[in-house]
Length: 220
Image 1 (cartoon, rainbow, N blue to C red):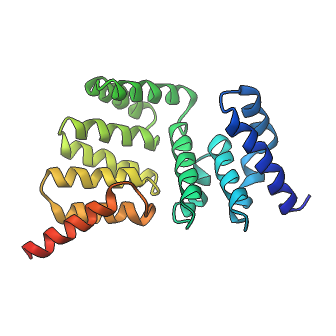
Image 2: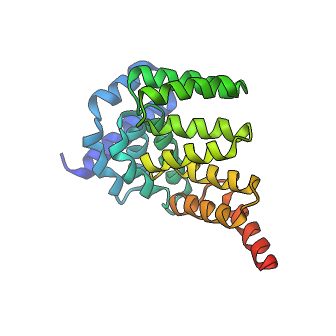
Image 3: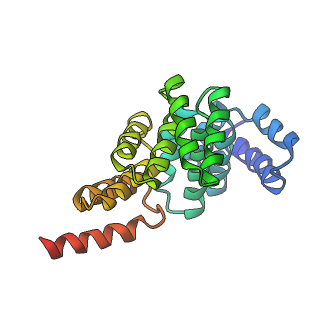
């Protein structure tokens, strides 16, 4: 089967999954028939729908080694494809730990959603002791610390998230938010530009860059 035929079959499979994402049978079928190694090359297809389907599939089957290919799609001229790549990156990042680590991360994210930030920090700090290479644990720790205005601790966590995962646009943007709170506008601008270099359409950040550039020009 050539790549064109493979792409058509993938689009059909992913379309069925999109119509009923809660059906475990369809998810299992995609995971069984469309392993990441089979799909990854389709990110370079000339068909936008094939590329989008491949990105979606990698979000279900891929791992951290596939992030570079997905991150390239964040620059795609089609915003739908870029959004699919973003969603898939988040899926991969959230399950990049061990099975137990992923459960602990989910518990911490639940605490964040309930605005129980101290609980989240405790859970994430314990997780990082066990799995120091889990980039998303560092990112979520930075987010929680930033909300509580523990800004220097937050910056440390965000930096580690970016060291472990250089495609983490949200960690770069988070650093920018911290620097804004610290009134360090030049570093904030640098952090925001780093985020946009990874993901040019990152919501809210182009406007923040424009505002900071005007502010810095006005103050010399």
